[in-house]
Length: 204
Image (cartoon, rainbow, N blue to C red; front, top):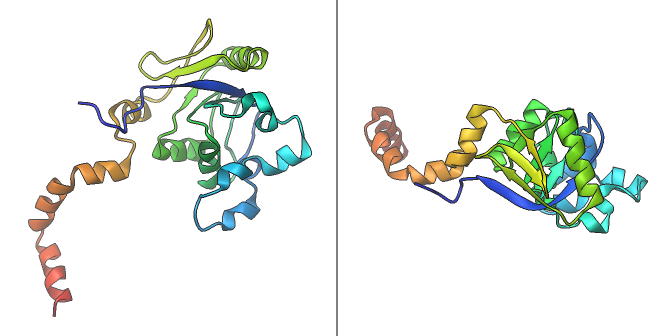
């Protein structure tokens, strides 16, 4: 049975972002954390880096509208701000390929339905070069075959079995899971004596 939360493949143009240990403060500077919602964060992704470096990949015209971000080692390290993956996703990125990801950043991405897959250094470097040489190349992250392809280049990728199953089965979406199980939740609640007691207490 399929559902709209399932994630099997993500395709689109790629964006190569070279560098190790890119932390969450660089992804979304702290001054943008005061926002009550995540709206508008996409416009501020890498705000300081982009201001300091005109040639930053997120500034370059050929990468606007890219869907797959290709990074290097320990991406998303530093403070555990959910704003970082939110900003990346709201800019338009739907999947990431990298050598490694900080654990909390990875977990936040899973909770948002944005898969982060890993490849070895040679594979990541080859993908980054392929995209840089041909920015219009179609990049596909395939969670069934566990590959990342760009044109005629195919790189094996990895993801833990648990998170991968959450994507392909659609169980990463906690809200959708609750909505889908609403009837079962109501039935369980009706059998719990303390739920009935709390409702009774509120009516008196």
